[in-house]
Length: 197
Image 1 (cartoon, rainbow, N blue to C red):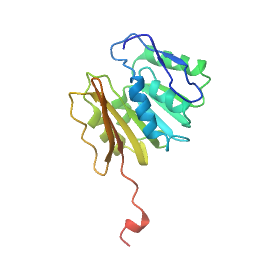
Image 2: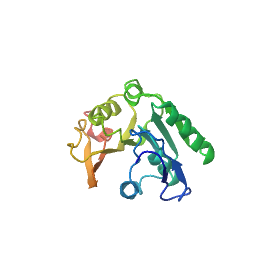
Image 3: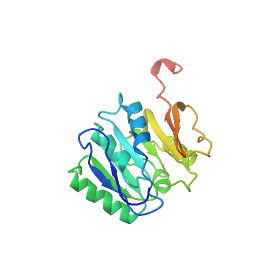
């Protein structure tokens, strides 16, 4: 889908529609797939901090806030997308809950973390990009994620699932149309009982 609108499925903004930029790289996650994702996340979502990389329409980040997440950071390199996402924040009165940053996601992740660790990250780059494994490695290596954080990957069906960093676990997977999706959990912090005396 390029251009048009995408609806928020549930929560306080249920039924509200987000404008979608007329750009082939902006490809909102379909309603059916988002419903599956947020059903999976429902027990852990309230009060979480979320990172929406390659945000595009912002549907994942705004849906998370609508359903009870505490804060979402939306990253997109496209200036027009950034302008529109900030306009959506103002329209939804979400300025305190949503931060929009115009930046290349890979470059942004390659530096040490500048936000408190995230509990959930959404990785849904344009289909032409095969960067899922690189993004996962940067999330793991630079302190962006809280222990046990969950990471969502969405990619075209013909591609293999991304290689996960050491200690990560694949929790769930599915497919719909030409899309495959995966939910992984990053390594938990070592407990004191696991450490050598």
